[in-house]
Amino acid sequence: MFVVGVDIKTRLRLEVSLCNKTQTTRRFESGYLHQRRKGRSMGSRAKDLTGQRFGRLVVVSRSDRNGKNSHRVYWNCQCDCGCASVTSSGCLRSGNTKSCGCLRREMLNARIGSLNPYWNPKLTDEERIQGRKIPGYEEWRFEVFQRDGFACQRCGDDAGRNLIAHHLEGYAENPELRIELSNGITLCEHCHSDFHHLFGSGNNTREQYEGWINE
Image (cartoon, rainbow, N blue to C red; front, side):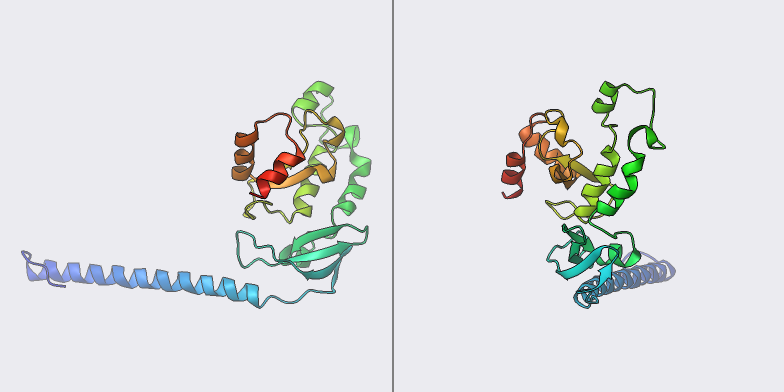
């Protein structure tokens, strides 16, 4: 590159600087492409877990679910209790997921309400309901996330730290369904906000969700 109007030393410094920037950019682009190819190849060459047992789960087949991280592979599993679940390879092989959620429920049965170490005796029943601090609520929330593979069921976002357990039948209007596993679904903050922007925050129904998710 030839720069007009500067002395030879200044011109050389500019040329060296531009050359270094070009090399840095090329190295960044090369590394980025390598990571993308690596991610794709990891997904396509993932070890087949079909037939293997992980705790109470037996892998039935590979799922067609794709999370936000495209290299993450999900598997359709059958639990010993009879329920089905979809879980990632990482959760299965690390031991973080050992059942559809039934194992955790059994372990926590003796720790509901005043037996829970985080129980606050100063809260009234009304305050617990309004603040969603009713017995079993946090366990229900975790079980919903676990069943759904810790991923938004609308957009597939599985980045973490932004998931919400959404009540299909409204929380306030259906007290008997507040910690019913079948009444929860995992959404990311963005999709959850989009749903309530369309349908409001009261008297929500399963029919609203099904119509919205199938748009």
